[in-house]
Image 1 (cartoon, helix red, strand yellow):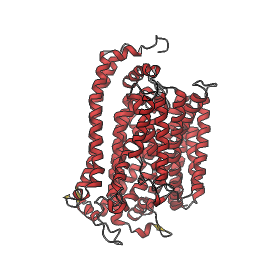
Image 2 (spheres, each protein chain N blue to C red):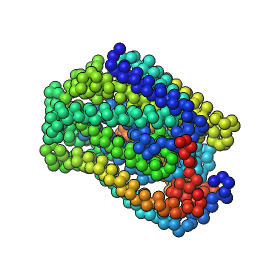
Image 3 (cartoon, chains in turn purple, brown):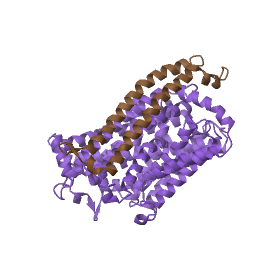
Image 4 (spheres, rainbow over the protein chains, first blue to last red):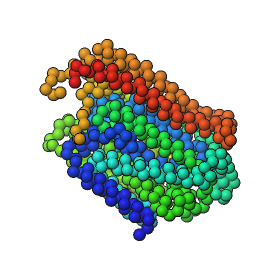
Length: 522
Length: 102
């Protein structure tokens, strides 16, 4: 049995034990959907980081920096800075005024049924697309790392993730994410150390090598410290810089609208802990993305492109594992491979958890059954069935689309919908008294449709290079569209005295935590 | 709480203590948000439209573009630290506002 396989199995065994432990503690909706609101600040910070740092960021960003240098590093910066939006605007009001899902905050003073229906749709779209991207990546990576074929690899990841979510709920998902975040940080620290050791612990030597990156002596030296290799006018044409600005806007406003990140703030006892968990997450996420400088740029000074090429195609996702192999040998390669595997599992579990909670709580309980539970435990049962359906659908799509599907397209779509549909409505419902149901429905609906259309019409979409819309990141257009739709929907329709009267209540709840959901476990 | 009389949200919202809390929060969050958005978006704008200036070396091979990108990490952490400091004061104000209710 190969060393990577043994490490995979060790991780799987440990997480199944956690699931077994968590399953015994799942005694009610608050326990299942919000881990009993008993997670501490540093634990939730690690879990947020574990939920957020996907395989796309560990493997994808390393690869992007390896190829495009500085421009790839732009993603690293945006992924951290985005948490200021979460910290300043979203985390505390959400924890104070909500219960299980993003829609709890949106539906607070508006007509719950239309708002929840659309918020639930948007959550399912974001989560499913994000998940297909992760699944496809997972299948391809597992095939490379331990030689299991694409289809069984995708099915394996899907089934494991379902075991965590269906039996272990939010508590098991949280601990899987915490362990994954710790493993990822250990792996990244060791990889960074080895890169620095290669350059004799001299930053002068390191940056010198990056500025003359020659891919292990196999290519003409290229200055990867200089911007422009991906978004520069010379490479990307006149729209390149705008595409970069649009990417940054999408990252910095999209993160605060990602449903699987938002629901993490319901797992802590109060808004103060939600705040400290964002700070913990920012410390970990920031440290991680600073290290992408070392192993992303570092790889370009060490790794030959030929070692990453299979069947004439450069597989940039393999940069981090292959770098580990070259610098640290087979055992370290196995460890980094297991970390990549853990990363994928933790993220897909978080996505499935938020999608199924939204369908069960928003759509099934509140839209179909007007907020009344017919039998106790029904909401959890529906969530488990939904998790199963979402998981099965994602496995099916991932296998149908196959290993060649453009993962950047799917991740871009998720961030774009989050920034253009979810965030405008979250912000306006907390800060604008006049905001009404039509405005929320318009913001969610138009933001969702605009994001999908612009991405389909863009360079990553159906027309490829002939695309009628020049930007692969539509944020700079779709975010204003989302805000304007929400604003127009509100001012063009009658004032809603009920919603405005409840604004006082929402304000008091959001800013003081009075009447917020209390911790149940411990 | 369920046994007590329902909370009079409108009355709390009108309390001067609550209004003061909101004013304090606004006075920090609004400028902080705009500062961070401008500081952050300056990065892609400068890198996209003034690449030659940004390529100017400041320390060995390290250029302005890299230093500015790196400073974003520091900015984010400093911002988080400042926020946590002021938010601790808001927690006390919020506790005063709802003391009679809990």
